[in-house]
Amino acid sequence: MTRHERAGYVAKRLGELYPDPPIPLDHRDAYTLLVAVLLSAQCTDVRVNQVTPRLFALAATPERMALRQVSEIEAIVKPCGLGPQKARAIKNLSALIVQRHGGAVPQKLEELESLPGVGHKTAQVVMAQAFGVPSFPVDTHIHRLAQRWQLTNGRSVAQTERDLKKLFPRDIWNRLHLQLIHYGREYCSARGCDGTLCEICRHLFPERRRGVRTKRA
Image 1: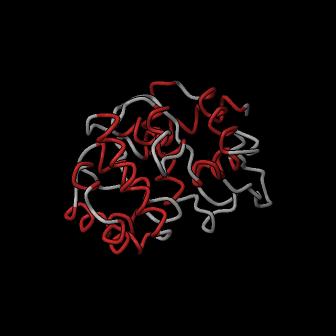
Image 2: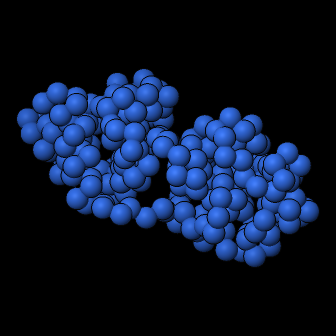
């Protein structure tokens, strides 16, 4: 089976398993999604969803968040880890959104990436899930699956992103990104599958007997 044939099967099967994949992070709009994605770095979505209701009760707009003290924000987001850094980033990006963008989350990738605490993956998630712009943010789950299914060599997250964008049609990127995350958590997790156990791994590589060592994101 060629790489393109494997990609075709993956897209077909994930489409059957997750025809309408939900966005894992609870949010109300582009701003609350941005903050939630920022908090999700090195933290589970479950924990973020437990924290954000209290945070957004404190301030749910960049105008209001920019007026809060970093210590107030940190006291709430501390369970997500990296509390001081994330709290400063949330306050500072909120102020910049007000100052530079009139209180609206920018809809250009480079402008998003210029905000404090917003990296390439975070910016792409917002572009895809808030604005519907075809994007392919690669997280640890997607990076792992792409290697196990030999859709990339896994040299880097950036390389994985480039390879997946070449393999899959642009019009399914946003949906497929979510489908891969859900499958990676539910069936092909880091510990629950080694590249030989889950349905898709077994279908793509029926003769594989040894587990696959994947490179970290």
